[in-house]
Amino acid sequence: MLLLQLLFFSIIYIIGVAIIIINSSRKKKISKIGLIFIASPIVIGAYFFIYDKVSKNYFAKPNYDELTGRYHIVDATLGDFDKSSYNKYSLILNKDSTFTLTPTPNIDVCDSGKYELDYSAEYNELFFRCSQGGYCAHIDRHLNYYRIEFIIGDPDTGESIFFEKDK
Image (cartoon, rainbow, N blue to C red; front, side, top):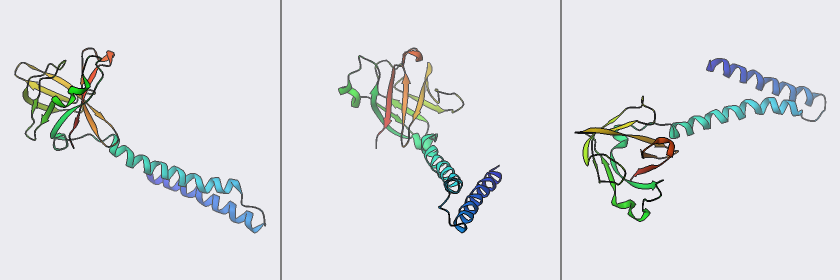
């Protein structure tokens, strides 16, 4: 498929060059159509190149090693959550798949246990396993970083607490 696309864009480019050469031999101005034929494959190629580079950062799915570290709250969409207390709460994900969570209001997860990573469950990629059950969390991916989102109550209400990895 890629080979066909390259062939197609090459033909368009060659046609554009031919149009410009024919018009220049007739002492006419450079043809706008020729420039469009030349520029189209270049612009489309540049778009896909940039998209490929950006999408790798934006859509990348962190693995266990990349998740390992200390996190703190950076945002909470709950109206009653005090911003000045964000740094009091931390989540630590260890390489051995264990975690430690500071008791956090509205998040009913034990203080420590094991976590599992599963990308087949959309919006529930992380599962925090405790002795009496567990709790799911979402990995909210952005261009150069990600946050762990604990959805509070009904997902349709949009209430969440976001933890971001300490630098």
